[in-house]
Image (cartoon, rainbow, N blue to C red; front, side, top):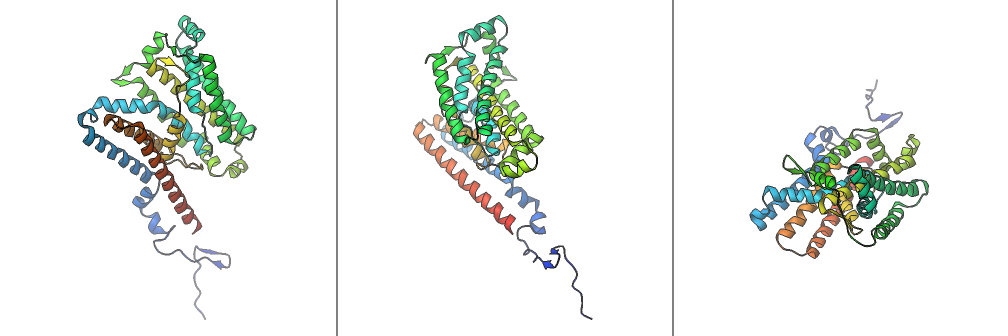
Length: 358
C-alpha cells in the first residue's frame, strides 16, 4: 500500500498550493519577527522622520549655536508650525480618503477677514469675543460644505472643485476687506489667543488639542476606519454599506473647520485680518502630510507622521533663518524633500503590492 501524503493547510480542494520559500513574504519567519514588522510598517516610517528631525536639530545647533539650541527658539519653531499643523490635520483626513483640498489657505484668509469685520467686532464687544470664534468656524465649515457638495454630489474632481474655492474665497476676502488690513480691537479675543499656559503659548496648546482629537478620530472611531476604507477602495466601501458621499462631505467640512481654527490662531498671532493671510499654506499642508507618510492615492493616513512632517519643515525654515539663508534656498530644499518623500512612498507601495501578490 502506498504511503498517503498528509493534507496541508495550503491545499484547496484538489489543488495544492506550493508553500512559500523559507523567509519569504508571508512566512512565519517574517510574521514572527516583531522588529522587522515594526520597521517595515508605520513605526519604521515614524522613526525615519524622528531621525530626520534630530539631524536638522544637530545641524541647527552646529551652525547657529545657542541662537538655535534654546527653549525659546524651540517654542518659536512649534508656534510657527502650529497654524500649518492644524490645517495639515484636516488635510490628512481628506488625503487619506483619496481627496485633496487646495482651498484651505484661502479659507483661512477669508475667516480672518470675516471675523474682523466691523459689525462682527462690534457685536462681539457687546456680547462676547466668542462670537468671533463661532463666526470664523462657521465660515470655514460653510466653505468646506460647499466643497463637499460639489465634489460628492456634483461629481466634480476634488482638484478642480477646491481650486475654484481657492480662487473664490480669496476674491471674496478681498472684496469684504476692500483690500485693506483689519485690526482686531476685541481685547478679550487678543488676551486669550496671546496668553500662555504653564509658560507655553496658547497657540501650541490648541495645536496639541487638535492633534489629539485628530489622532483619536482617525485611529479609534468608525469615522476614521471609514475614511481609510474609502481611500483604499471607494467602490468596495460603497458595497460595504458606507455612505460614501455623505462621508466625503463630512471630510471637507472637517477640513474647512480646521482652516477656521487656523484662521483664529492667525488672528491671535498677527492681531489683524487680511485677504493675504494663508497664501500657499495649502501647499505647506500637503507637503507635511505627504512627507509624514500619508499616501497621496489614499488608503493610509497617519496623524503623528503629519505632525513630524510639519515640525521638519518648520525646523528647516528656522535653521535657514538663523543662518541668514535666502527663501529661494528654502524653497529648493522643500522641493527636494517632497520629491524624496513621494519616491519613498512609491517604493513602499510597490513592496506592499509585491507581498500581497505572492
